[in-house]
Length: 279
Image (cartoon, rainbow, N blue to C red; front, side, top):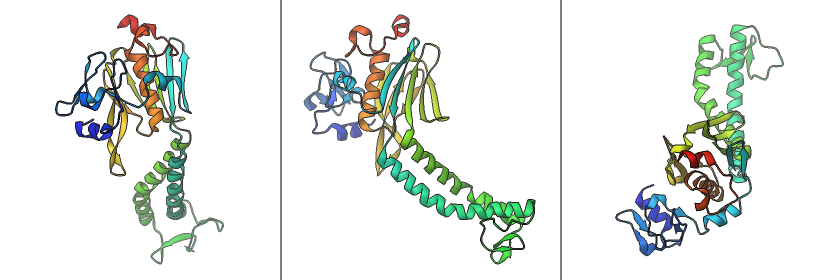
């Protein structure tokens, strides 16, 4: 996250907190030019991207999980889940998908009719294709040949891709989730729904920072915040999460992966003893 973006996010607000002791840091203790902040309690000098930005302490955040967020111990590991459910997001994607796919379906039916008529035989009378002539759909007043049909199929590929993407977006905003699996043998971050998940693996023993970053794409002219997990590779995720769920998930991962049992702000989280032993 750039210094200018950080300052715009916290300017005039008591939101910044020390990543070590969770003490709030006044704006007077922030050096924008150098990009660092000094904690008045523990004396830690932190980069601005490392600060926690919240009016609530980590202990308060963890004690009140948002709706759709949960932690499930599994063997010696744990699964942290944050829902992507958003009514406004679902309605937006669903409305656009219905409009787009409704218009697109007419051209898809014509393409299917052309393939059937040229490769199999005359179309049945009940097939819902407009302007049939000799069992074939018409294009520019003439029956569609195989060449024109294949051209239409290729032409429709990007439009169908957009329609499928909008449909998946609606489903994700309804039942999607971000899932972080921390296990001794295999750990990953997965975003999506059912079998449609983007899964990225990382080594939990090599995690050295969990901060906020910015996504590569913009929404309404502004960059979106993401969680950055820096380990053997840097993983950015959670751009579709609501702010309270993102805040909770970041706090959970910070406590599980970067703090020992004695340093934690809460005792309600599972103990990953194998990380402490290896660290």
